[in-house]
Image (tube, rainbow, N blue to C red; front, side, top):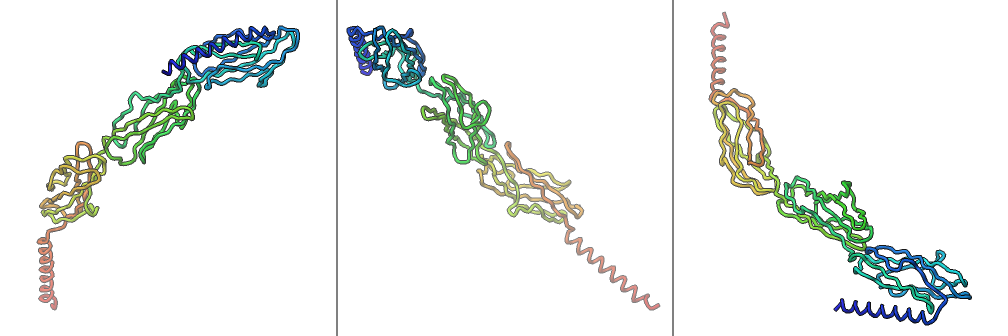
Length: 382
């Protein structure tokens, strides 16, 4: 239906041009309009400059009204003479004046011939044709060959995008991102950080987009909508970041204290706390120990099946010192690990003398004091 209406409009316009031409001829006017280029082919959005002569072939001065007729509402023009916009012009007999006509072809326009006229009212009609060489659009395209990237939470994600200006005019686009809270998005046209970019008509600009997730972001899929926009046109692009999660843990004790005491040859229980400080589940957390010679360290349990992000689990480490351990400070390093992460904690363990040896020492001292006292009483007065 729309095509039929457009076709009828063309027929009526052509008929009007023919009728106007016949009326002008019947007037046998001395005023003639002339330009050498009556049929011009241009792309959408082009500006056409016409130089039109107004000739007076008569024997008296002629003052005529001049105007442009037949242009669609989306087309604009200016008609000037001597640098001024005019609607009327006077020409001496046997002379000519030159009009400057500028016609702006719209960006969004149908391909094909478009007719209009320059009219010297009551005298002459100059018919002109503009052939639009291609279908006009006012479109912007924002694309990315790889719009989905997967990685860990501590990684930066870089997308290579293309912004195509499919209009016939130079466009300046503002660049925006609607990322989740805490995310950082940086646009880099031509590898330089910017918030706007200029793109020539029918050209493509490469834009690198760097996305930084917030600290300790949870594993999951996140959409990062980005947009290039100006007052005339816009384009949207959805980027997608898949966070596979981070693996991290912290090994300590409920109080945070990493020291203890033990009696030589005896056992000491140390409660351990493993906290998942990453964003992924820690699976099969195993314990091991680096200990002094002849010491033993056993764990209960020796493996924790899983710890969710932000959660913690406990275990018991039973430390036994060597039977003949010399009193002093020793270091035992306990490690919690998975294939993806590990955490160490070094415990300072002070070895003390067994209580039996303490009593024996006291008895020896008392016996020595008793012997000295006996000898003093027996031999002291001689």
